[in-house]
Amino acid sequence: MEDTGLTDCPMPEPFREKIGITLSLAWLFFLGFVTRIIFAPLMPAIEQDLAISHSQAGGLFLMISVGLLTAPLCSGLISSRINHRGTLILSAWLSGIVLIPFLFVSSIWPLRLLLIAIGFATGIHLPSAIATITAQIQKQDWGKALSVHQSAPPLAFVSAPLLATLLLAVFASWRMVLAVWGAAVLISALVYTLRGKGGDFPGQIASLDNVKTIVTKPAFWLMVLLFAMAMGGNAGIYAMMPLYLVEERGMALGSANIIIGISQISGLLMVFVGGMITDKVGQKAMMTATLLLSGIFTVLIGILTGGWLIAVIFIQPAVLNAFFPAAFGALSRIAPPHMRSVTNALGPPISGLIGGGILPSVIGYLGETRTFSAGMILAGVFILVGPFLMPLLRFGQYDDQPGC
Image 1 (cartoon, rainbow, N blue to C red):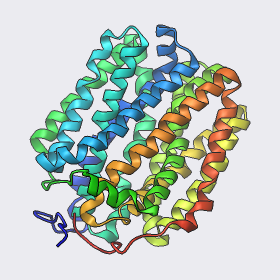
Image 2: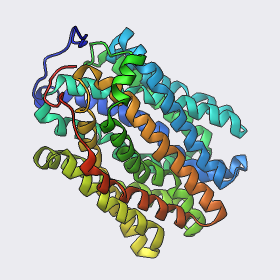
Image 3: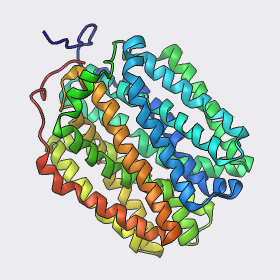
């Protein structure tokens, strides 16, 4: 008889009963996400300090994605031993600790190794967080709950450039910016260790059999590709946007970071709206609409200049961030409930390697050999393929099964 892994599985409850747990997980996700993306607004300063090229700078984001990709190899093992809550605590502590050695970095190779470590430390959060939310909250409320959790990335996209600009003005050193943020993450890790709740059940080890169960599903690979498109328009574009605006559009670094940060507020608002709309129209319809519109706006980022460019920079994240609550809900429907942590451990990191790692590297290469604009247009065309693939997406027989 199949082991469903339901020992100690919590009873799903309405969202209003579990909002505290959802908010605490969203806060941890926010801390880890800022830790990953704060390097984008700092990159012009890092480039100048370490004397690296645009292509090398783009490749640094690939290092974070490599770390994110290694996390699934360990996240199931960790959560099966110390439960999902223990994994969330470990992720928070490692995310703060790994920022401290940046004080001593003076060349690109130590920087690359530390970025891989950051990818790993922050990458083990998501599988346990999604498994906790979908196990402890009723399925009809997933859109609301996942919207709260997925508010962390757009809030991080708002906060990171503003934090970087403010802390650079105070400390005048990108290394000190990272150290100060690391201290803030460690304080929050301590608070969650002492007060955090939820996730007191084990995850599934990403064994060969478990991985085979997931990777043999065509729906899994289609979701990986759709996530890669969205992450490319989100984290991939964001990673290179400061260099694009500074090097190709002639903006000052401080002005570029302020524009980028404020523009992400629209995405923060839309992630909640997107979750509510998803609960009404369905996940596939929401993903189709958001990818279509965000692909068009991403192409326009590479074409427009002046005020029109700034307007599109504000609109694009509003549309794209509405994709993620629907997508994480869809990803949780393609495997048995007890395999959700494995599905979320494998899918987003692979997508992140493509959209958040390879794509910025391509944009950086084009920025060095041709123009950043060409890279932005290429990213938009990539996203526009998504809506045409959506009719192929099929969910499995596990669609309505509760549990963890």
